[in-house]
Amino acid sequence: MRTMKIGNSGLEASVVGIGTWAIGGDSNWGASDDAESIRTIHRARELGVTLLDTAPAYGLGHSEEVVGEALQGRRDDYVLATKCGLRWDIEEGAVFLERDGVRIVRNARPERLREEVEMSLRRLKTDHIDIYIVHWQSVPEYPVPIEDTMGALMKLKEQGKIKAIGASNVSREECKEYVKHGQLDLIQEKYSMLDRSAEQHFFDLCAEHNVCFQAYSPLERGVLTGKYTLDTPLGEGAAKRKIKWFEKENLVHIVDLVKKWEPLCRKYDCTMTHLVIAWTAAQGTGDNVNVLCGARKTGQIEENAGGGDVVLDPADIERMRADVEAIA
Image (cartoon, rainbow, N blue to C red; front, side):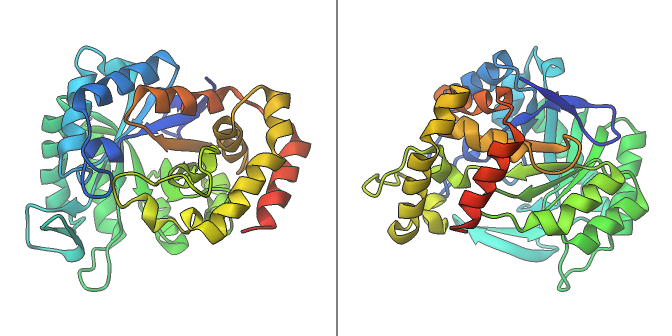
């Protein structure tokens, strides 16, 4: 597994990270097997995956609790990332969503972040978080200046409770504000070969300020694994049904893509999943793209981790881009 630097933080982590949204278990994903989730986290480390990403909102604290159990006696083996700014235990804030009978609000005010980091530390059973990420940004209904949020995060960093600061689901202007008011080491954005909009918004800023770009949903919730045909059932949970590429009129293009890239899979002795992850990691400038892949079963992380070992020839990277640009 190749490794990379996380911005200017001094942290070094695997090119492929493991995401734990599904481990939280909710109506998006269906129930999870906690014991299997813990085995998956341990297996990830055996495969060289050191970056472990979670969030309080994943299963309303459950994902963090499972991760905390998995980290016992192994904390130093992982670069641990969690998030802040979404609360379900307070009324104050802008409504983010209501799911499974629970109302979640956005609130990244300094006093709330000071509360939230302590709750995450308890659930994770650790005394520090390596990368602390603002999960979703404030909205006009409940504005919080990024200068205030960043000031609070920098204080947490001074106190040793966090080592690096990240932001997720940001605009280009919000990213500039974070950089202006402190040291931003990572942004986490949705990015895949089928959804490349983040390139024009962030790649130049990340290169200019030495910020790691972390791509989430690089496999578009599994459609790019090459395992889906026009007749494959989607299974439990609503997450996949939100992705347009699972609709048959779009899925047919993915099925054709898999066939077209079979020679590349043979050339690199890899799977479609490996090929897509390797292509994603090759984007950006100066090896600054980290690829975050969700997993809650050992087989899933075993498949995803292999993408961190594949290095594609420049000509094949360009060929794959041309192929996907023809359909998306």
